[in-house]
Structure formats: C-alpha cells, structure tokens
Image 1 (cartoon, rainbow, N blue to C red):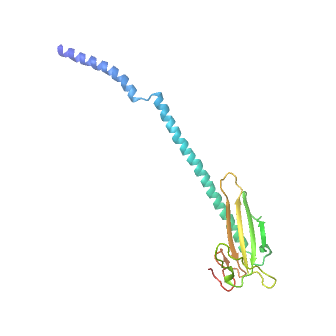
Image 2: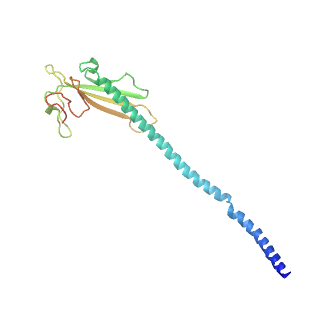
Image 3: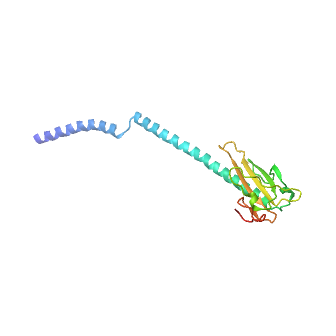
Length: 193
C-alpha cells in the first residue's frame, strides 16, 4: 500500500501539475490580443509599401507604353513623308504644320520641312557649339536636300514627365534618304561624315 500511496501522491501531484501546466500550455500555445494586433500592424505596413511599389510600376509601365506609341507614330509619319516624291507639294518647305493623317487619340504630330542647296559636302560640316547654317536655295540653285523634323507629343495628362518624340531625317532628290548622319548621296561629298 505504501507503494500505491506514493503512486497516488505522484498521480495527484502530476494531476495538480497538469492542471497548472495545462493553463500554461494554453498561454504558450496561443497568442494574446496585443500580439495579434502588433502582427497585423506590421503586416499592414509591409502591404502598404508593396502597394506603393505596384502603383509606381504601373505608372512606369504606362509611361513606357506611351513612349513606344510615340516612336511608332513618329516612324509611320516619317515613312509616309519619305515615300513621297522630292518635288511633291506636300514636301514644300514649311516652318511647322500639324499632321492630320491617322494620328491616334491623345497624340499630336507636328512636322517641319526645310530646303537646302548643298553644292559641296564641306558646307554641312560644322565644328563647335554653333556650326554655320546650311545654305538655302536661291533663284539659280534649287533645293537638293530636305531636312524633315517630326515631333510627336502625348496629350495624356495622367502620365508624369515630358512626352515628346523627335526624329529628324534628310531627303535627297535621288530618293536615297538618310537618318540624319549624312547626306546620303547629295552633293559632291556623298555618304556620311
């Protein structure tokens, strides 16, 4: 019986300990309301930071799409102008004019064409920050080079920053065109610099 009594005492002590331990076990296995609120606060701060990144990346993505669209419209207008005959009335020298053909909504295309009379390639070479102006046609010398400048602007106000694409190209009577690096066969010099 003594053994049993010891065993009962042990079991009673362990029951008492289990009751005390069980209340501790609940406290250790669960979270208090304050701990949950602190965790939710930290999670909210992290989520708000990530949402800010998403909105910024959406604006950057829309900006890149807008620039790509500007470049595409600029190339289309340039190809249309370059495909015309050198003496086409649409290619008459103009200070600036608005392009009306197939311009998407939210875009504005302004182009200018300048005539030049180049007799020697050295006339178009300039050094320094202010190179001399190219010679313009006179009554005797006709234009043999056209400088075409196209400006495509975005009218979308929701995008930040300047939205403008500018391209300049040269056109010669022979039909050989240059992207601005040389005369493309005009005058005696031919080729680029």
